[in-house]
Image (cartoon, rainbow, N blue to C red):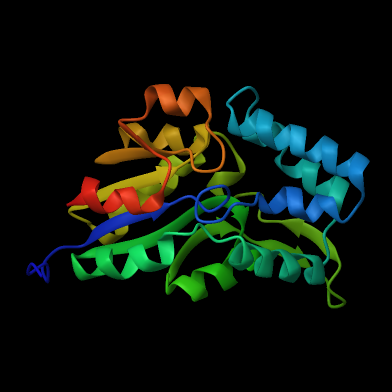
Length: 218
């Protein structure tokens, strides 16, 4: 094992369709019936493929679904049930070589938190949902950067300023992840669940299994 005590290297993962097979917002829509699920899924794909801005559908999807706190907890368990098959074995190896994993998502912090805990990831950058005392949906953090296009590079810039890492690598499947390419030391596109043409074409590296990172990061 190398001595990396003086280095902080951040390995930043998207969550949906990367660390787990599911798209959390789509799963929240699924319990509302097939018609609503189809509408929300189409919006999600259009945004992730870069055909429309994230902000044009972010709040609209939530207003259509109006997920309860209980719904969000159920999706949190689904993230774990549908976890990417190689990541649990991968992360300890990468930690041993000095990498600190981070989750950066346009998804919802309360849903992602159980997966992060399962994987031992302490830093989650994601959108907070707001519920009333009975657990009914009220709103979301409208100021959080990943609710809009260009938001993930903003978070990367803030992490770089706050933590002063020696290296940042970003891994994700969507165009919102690809937007970070100019802000990180390496962007790795991921196509294990969905191969998005723009990501596959423009990413510095492209993988279909997360354990391929072990060779890339050396």
